[in-house]
Amino acid sequence: MERLLNAMTVLSIVLILLVLRSVRRAHIRVEYSVSWLGASVTLLVVSRSSGALEWLGGVLGIQDAALALIFIVGCLFLVVLYRFSIVISNLKDANISLTQRLAILEFHLRSLNEKQETRTTV
Image 1 (tube, one colour):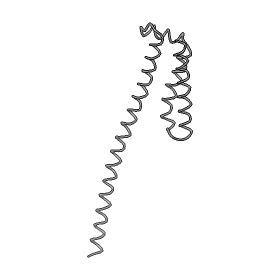
Image 2 (cartoon, one colour):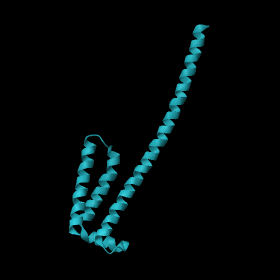
Image 3 (spheres, helix red, strand yellow):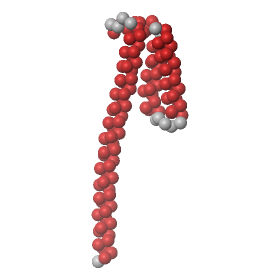
């Protein structure tokens, strides 16, 4: 069990460093990094406090603390992935709206150009 907790601690620290490095190099936006940092800090705290992990396992009805840790990790990352699904959906809707507005502007620009061409030929 101790080896699993140590591995989770190392993984959470690596994830924190990776996210901070990505923010610094502008590979990921700050508002998206908050979810990853929150999940990795929670993972770090849970992996370092075995008492809290055992209590949480008892609350969830899981006898083995290792299974409780895996369950918590899975739930954390499901929440992060759900949040990003919402962000992606909003971005897709905004992209569709922007494309439609651009098409309307192009249509108006073409019609203005056609009107100007007809005036200059007359």
